[in-house]
Image (cartoon, rainbow, N blue to C red; front, top):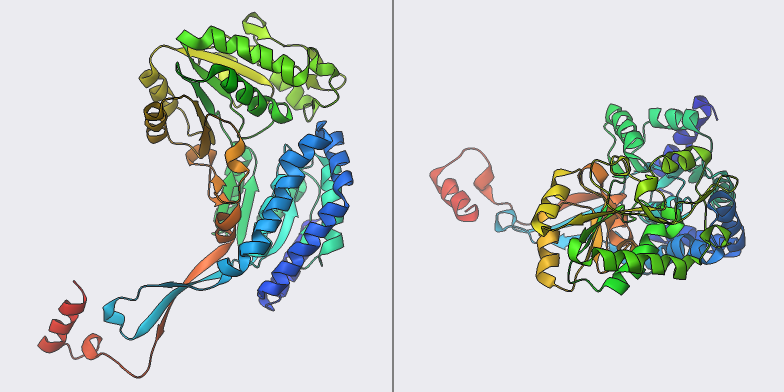
Amino acid sequence: MTEQEISKIVEKQRAFFTAGRTLPVAFRKDALKKLQSAIKSRESEIAEALKKDLGKSTYESYMSEIGIVLSEITYMLKHMSRFSKKQRVRTPLAQFHSSSYKLPSPRGVVLIMSPWNYPFMLTLDPLVDALAAGNTAVIKPSAYSPNVSAVIATIIAECFEPQYVVTVTGGRAENTCLLRQKFDYIFFTGSQAVGKEVMRNAAEHLTPITLELGGKSPCFVTKDAHIPLAAKRIVFGKYLNCGQTCVAPDYILCDASVKDAFVKEVCKEIASQFGPRPLENPEYGKIINEKHFTRILSLIDKDKVVYGGDKNVASLQIEPTVLDGVTFQDGVMQEEIFGPLMPIITYTDLDQAVKTVQENPHPLALYIFTENKKTANTILSQVGFGGGCINDTIIHLATSEMGFGGFGESGMGNYHGKDGFMTFSHLKSIVDKKTWLDLPMRYHPYTAFNEKLLRMFLK
């Protein structure tokens, strides 16, 4: 798609929005119901596309992508009328007699750029929030997941006029053309490197943005953790989608006194969850492409592999792999892994381990496995991160009742549920002043009496 064609799309969407078509809540609800119906009717096509692009099973596709989008739609249909209403606030006495309120209003024409690792969920989830808030949207799914992108484009064309919602497919050239346009808001999910480019382009138009990035998310396993359950839940979170999850536990910080027991349980859990030969398991996924497959393999130090490490070049699969005796100087610790490798770093001093995490860039997620509330609270209060769990992994992003987002180098802004609605809204602050009374203290001439009144009200 050419820059001229993309420019025309944005121009038509702006005209559609300016005409006020998206303002009625009933219109927004109707849009979400159409999307909901289309997703349900094409569920098998979506699952098949996810299988082709990422090797996901039907179960995992629904659990981690389709079901989450449907849940977000259901939540918005239930709550968006309330979210859209004016929010009354207290009026100071100096503004007597007035009423004050904050009025949520849509931002306008928004751009949603999504990644390949959860290509359906990470495209449609922010779209649901954007439409609930009353915006038009241009969505740009990743070129690395072409089958899912094609299904998304079909669903969007089936549900919406292009001047309301449209899909732009393609690769880097289309991304560049889109970022040159003036949008009212940009929502980007992806790598830190591309996030910086998005931010630079947005700055040219002073366009506000949300960046959902990533980073090396630590997972603490303390000496008083419930080791068998910790291993079970960490294996689930680490190897979900073959580790290609932005909030996956990137590495394990394990107390030395329980490390051997933890490694034993992790190996047992991998065999239990994926079978003795995961590469032969039809429900075990694959790496998105050869480039990332090769990159992940380069991070494996064979001398430190205690489980897994095998690969299938033809299917782009890498076994769930555990690396023990890892240090922060190892190659696997120099970048976000985004693959099925679990490095285990041992510590003897929890305070020092916390300090090391503090000294590194803020991660998107943090996980703590402990039975000691004081320990958990200490780590939570001292480390900066986007969100996380105590005694579990991943699940904090699967609820519409809490916002999800990064912090520092792992991103900015939140979405899901009300947080998502507010991300795609602007709160207008309004004072509604009555006409039957007009206090004189703000007007010239400034008299001693008026000053007394002023001081009485403003103190």
